[in-house]
Image (cartoon, rainbow, N blue to C red):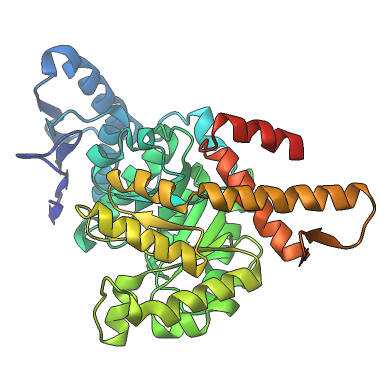
Length: 410
């Protein structure tokens, strides 16, 4: 709950079922000094540490007369810091940032071309779902500031997402943030661009201008700091967005992929999403074609039934057959199914390996024509085959004897 009345505010979450979070009640007084109250199951072990951190933050913001109540449900320091800072800044209007240490691994720049088969959405105001999410090995972790956060919670979520970018262990996953639609998304950018985000997901994108607006804000934010590469993944979720897909995909050099969001897209059409996906065939095919023409990756929508693994498997197979390179997921249990079914099968891999081998042999002999059996092979086919082989190797799904064959053709 977040509320304000005069000089009182409540930030964070507390109650039955709430873990790894904290509720902060902050009251700014006219006099009477500083009063800090802590209620925590781990108070005997960490109460003094919490008290010292709270005092340090109040000193940082020059707050002398205040009542600060801390109801702790096992929050990590970066969560506690985000909640207290949000409360103080909301009341005082301060723009100073109280930042946790930035882990070196969370400042790593990612490449434009890399595997992005799976990306796991994490609500931006729910720390319990963020912590250790990377151990499930998705290719990307999305800290979501848009649909997964209630409008009344977006202010405090920004502080939490910013601190998570600095302090959360991502275990090699790409650090992604889905911002809100512009212009509100510009506020989100100020909280995440300076703090190690790799990819900005731009929701409900309908025109190239929206992409350009995001890049303009990124440039303004990075004017007075060390520039770090920030990639953009527009999410197309409307009929207009589908029609403009190619223009969106080519709107900027830092676009790495375009994704489709089918829940909003089908709502925009006035239909409902079905398992057969006939209602979205045109849109999904258009997204794939636009992405390939623009030389970026096409990314499919999430599968919303987290209990139906067989349905997810069939959905992934359809997605792969259409030409998508990956999809979103909303539960860790979906990651393995997505990886296994986007990965090359034995027959697919062996054919790709033969194509690459034939190309290497022809190149070594100085031949301008590449053939496999009686069929001629052109460069796009070779490129796709090489991507298939690389995917199989990078995902660790090749059997031992295949790896030896792979090394031979390299």
